[in-house]
Image (tube, rainbow, N blue to C red):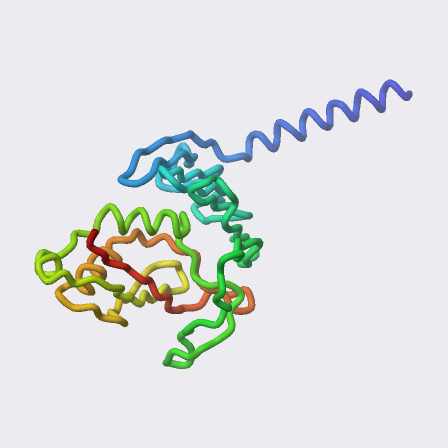
Length: 223
């Protein structure tokens, strides 16, 4: 009788595994090389536009990795800086910041949040975070900025500041020059910041995404 129960249990486990395999979606792995990074990810075999499974973005000096579930980011995603150190972790299933490297960060989580038809200073769970972090953003600026000829001739230097509105979906929807330098520098800063891919983790308040502003400083110097 004991042998019979053992056999029955073994068969039940086998049939259960087969049933799970039949319901699991079939996927295929893909790799793509883009302007500033490579992608390694999986998609549904019958619907290649739907990401499902492991997802890795690898840049020259940054990396992020996580998981997609039927086209949506899920679980904990990890972001690494140019030295390969963990910079940030965010749980997309719970909509919460898990870890942030704030050793050199003197800013609090009080930012401009859009609520009741206007922007107000508000404490948030996490500020908007660019997918790839500051390393990726700085590399993008350095690669694309063209110092205006007028500024070079006049030897104009300084820092322009661009405000970016990040909506609940993690997309940049509006841009504004907040601090000017002159000689076309702020216009150049605005042009390059507008080119950033729409890949942001939005700000969260009580676990819900909100529209908020961040401010990107762009420094120009002549050497």
